[in-house]
Amino acid sequence: MNENLFPIDADSDAILNLQEKIEVLKGKIEEVEIKLFPFEQSLRNAIADLLIEERELTILYKEQKKAKKEKRLAQKRKGKNYKEPIGIVPVSKKEVAEKTNQKEKKRLYKEAMLYVHPDKFSMQENEQQKALETTTKLIEIYQNGSFEELEAFHAHIFGGNTTMNFSKDISLIKKTTSNATYLKNEVQRLEQQLTDLLDSYTYKVLTTYKNPLSFVDELKAYYDDRIFKLRKRTRTKK
Image (cartoon, rainbow, N blue to C red; front, top):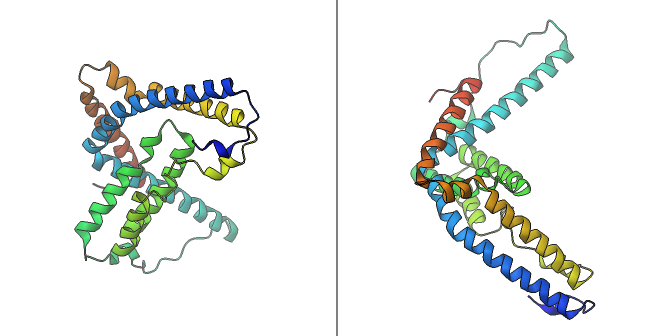
């Protein structure tokens, strides 16, 4: 931490105490993450295909709901007895997908999807919303974009340049009115982060199940049921 970023306007002992608390909290968070994150990644790898299909169906369901709503509004404007004219159904752009590098395109897509899947951020509401936006864009590029576009977005994600980058903007720190205020806020933030980690369901599984990886069966059952319901809602066949 660069001490020059803050004005020296607080008791040095209080500052030292806050800094010590921060270091202790960071150490505890790191201990939990070292255990938890590899376990969560193992779970995601075990149900990777289910996670991706569930995400795609969820987005499709939302798109269909939106389209139905827009259609109802359009019909309402044109009158109660208005009926859509029957004609030739235009060929979807998705059907004219390029075949070149399809295997590599699928690999990049799957890798990026697992990295930013919203379930990774279930205890972080703001970050989960960002993950939803990122995965929606990822699916859009995978389905409608070129291999080059997907490759670029993949590099963008793994380059730490997406909304999933949690590093704090140093300019925000410079604007803090006092060192003590910033450090107190940092203590609160880290305490909340530690609480969220310890309260997460996967951490409870990891620390209470005799065989934590048996939780995969529960996850598969959950996602199989959710996918089944989403298929019915979207009339999508496997």
